[in-house]
Amino acid sequence: MTSVRTQRNGPVLEIVLDRPRANAIDATTSRALGAVFIELRDDPSLRVGIVTGAGERFFSAGWDLKSGAVESPDRDWGPGGFAGLTELFDVGKPVIAAVNGLAAGGGFELVLACDLVVAAEHAEFFLPEARLGVIADSGGVFHLPRRLPHVIAMEMLFTGRRMSASEALTRGLVNAVTSAAEVLPRARQLAESVCASAPLAIGAYKEILLQTENLPLPEAYRVMRSDACAVYQRLRGSEDAKEGPRAFAEKRAARWHGC
Image 1: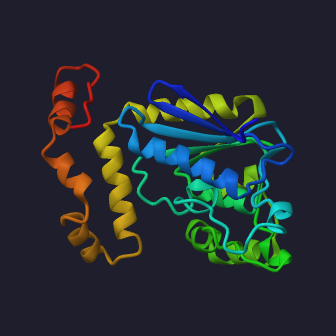
Image 2: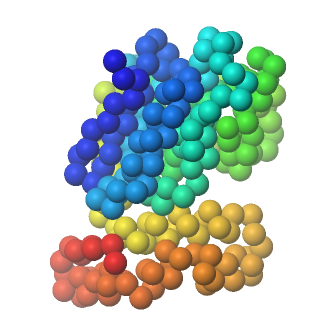
């Protein structure tokens, strides 16, 4: 049985991590996830990805500690880094995490690598690495202090304390909290909303944010206007940039072509 399942719903690619009992990720599973996220990146017919876990208890327990005991320290996680996404910086398309349960360690880091997050009411988020003698070096150490107040991020990193879905919503770490049965439907609604926007505009947002994060504002403007933001440059002279205002004036839905 494969540990990663996919399903296409039009322009949306749904990715299910299915590795009982805790959806833990070994090197083989990480490379399989990476192949799927690269498919999302490279297929022009795909607009959005949704990643979730099988079952209702775990989104993902993160790194498979049992396999880690026998795998080489120089294990190959694949071109996207751990879980296939944490170091795949050029996806250019939104990825939504549908968190159906516990997101621990690398599972939480996979969530942090996503753009939008829907969580079940019983979901929890935590990084236990420091208590295991390692650190959250697949993005947690970078993302968490940027998403949360400094003292809260430090508490989670230093102590491994758990954050509930309701607290995550209050702190702006997730977009929505739903019942367990509604997690995937709500993520699909988000994906549908994204697909109503122009694909080049979405790609330009992702590109600009990646290229300008933490830059002073004048420098951020300079980079945005430069060749470093090629998708933005394409957007400015695109047919879609003309189609949007035209559709608005004609009181109809826009017909996007991605060019």
